[in-house]
Length: 267
Image (cartoon, rainbow, N blue to C red; front, side, top):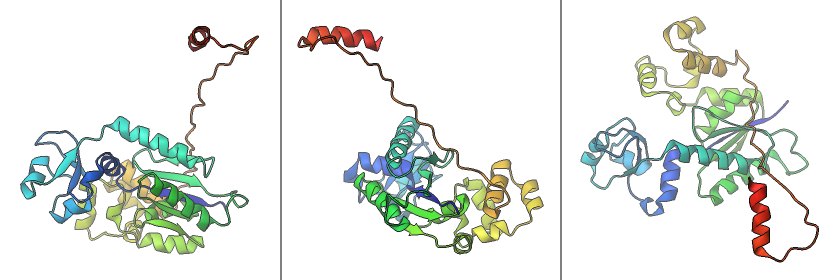
């Protein structure tokens, strides 16, 4: 059976902000939608949450709880560039990688066919975690059998983890808290009111009721979690670098003449 892995860099925009400002390590930190008092907090770190500062609050609300709150905007382009860089890094470990389109920091990686390069899947996953750590990222790597199962488990842990069987993976994923998944605040609040707090309780709901009550993305997530729909990996096709090449008739020692040649090739 093919093996799949999910690499999760939790709260990637927040990690990018903290990498940009390492001196904020022990401070309450938040990624804000806009750098103004009414800007919405999108991600908050553990220290900020100790002050009861949570995503969805206004920047001014967070400052009212502690004046030591450090917040900044992380532009979408920075997130996209980081995901591209992470994908290129992971190409050292697998030729097929799919970044999640709606959950920045989540990437699925094909883990099959690498037995001759690594001693074991445990070693492969550990080396990915080490590479992320060297780049100043916190990551979880879960190797399993199913797209949703590896995703749910990567959302609740840190470091490498290898599932030994599909049944083991399915059982562990059922216990994952639902609020760790990429759900909007309104949907999380509704599930909480219904007393549905785990993946298992979510997929035990009748399919017809979920389809009728929730929007298409939630129903698609339900079907993935329940295993009633198969979504094959869709690897990201990185564009090859543009290359032009010329063979000179004789060795060239003039920098100016080389610049003329290069300029012509660039055009």
